[in-house]
Length: 101
Image 1 (cartoon, rainbow, N blue to C red):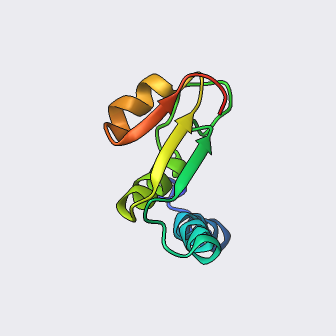
Image 2: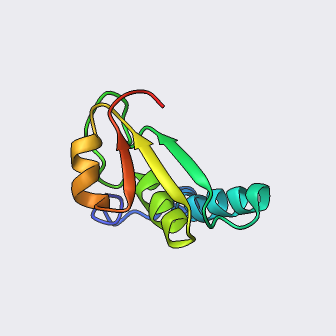
Image 3: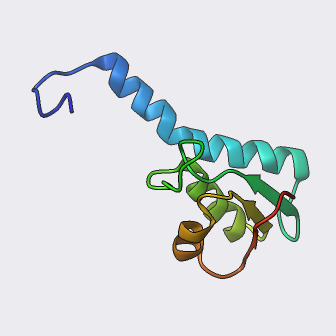
């Protein structure tokens, strides 16, 4: 938005860079706690970036789930509103729970 207005903001740019790094930091934290992710069970509670909606566009957790899965983790997700959209985006290889885990 600020680019459209021809306004540069160092604070906004720094915030964007930090936010882009967060998914990898979370993955690293999980790896540090568990060691190898291979065969580890990981439950994800909530997929939408706004509670009570099915909107998972730009949801950071999607990046995290894909990375965990790529590292061999077994993923189970729960989000009563967003489970349908999650299935279309994440596909097979993930357990989708319709009741609380």
